[in-house]
Every structure is written in C-alpha cells, then in structure tokens.
Amino acid sequence: MIFRIVRLKFQPEKCASFEKAFSEKRQRVVGFSGCHSLKLLKETTNPTVFYTFSCWENEAALDSYRTSEVFRDLWSTIKPWFAEKAQAWSMNGIYEGENSPAGIKEIYFNQ
Figure (cartoon, rainbow, N blue to C red):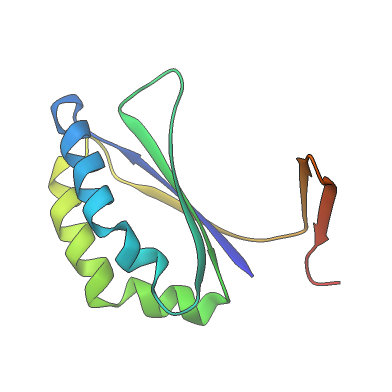
C-alpha cells in the first residue's frame, strides 16, 4: 500500500470553487483502479489550505492515476486557483489503529 498526501493552498476566493469541483469529481478519483480510499481535509487554522489523503494499491496504480485523464481533468481545473505550488508526499504504511464500539482494530502493513 502507498499513502499519498497532497497539500493544496488556494486563493481565498477560490476555496468554494475547489470544494465544488472536488465534490463533482471525487468519485472518479476514488473509483480509479488501484485507489482504496480518498479523504479531503482542511487545516483548522488556515481555511485556504487543503490536503488530500489517498491510499493506493501500489506505486504503479498511483502512477497510472497521475498520468490519467481523470487526473488531468481535475488538475487542469484546480491548478489556476493555487496560491502556491502544491506539495506531495508518498509513504509506505507501517501501522494503523482504529478505536470503535466494536473494539480496537489494528493493521500492520508489510508484515
């Protein structure tokens, strides 16, 4: 599994447009082959900064998405609205824990 975090800072007047565009296109991203999950997050102290957090089957799946029409369509829409260059990081998972009424669920990756 590959986890991808992308930091996006928008011009203040474009934040609502970004949220609308993301809402319209998110199912195409999360439905892309090899994508396991997608989250959109917003900083608590700066409402112009968003993060996408996605989980991919492997690096090849992520690379396939990054060269796809789905990516180009979304990116060409939102890139002109950036207040600064996007930053992105890819990471391997080590541990994930979840506390729910059913108990604690733990996942160790690559073991």
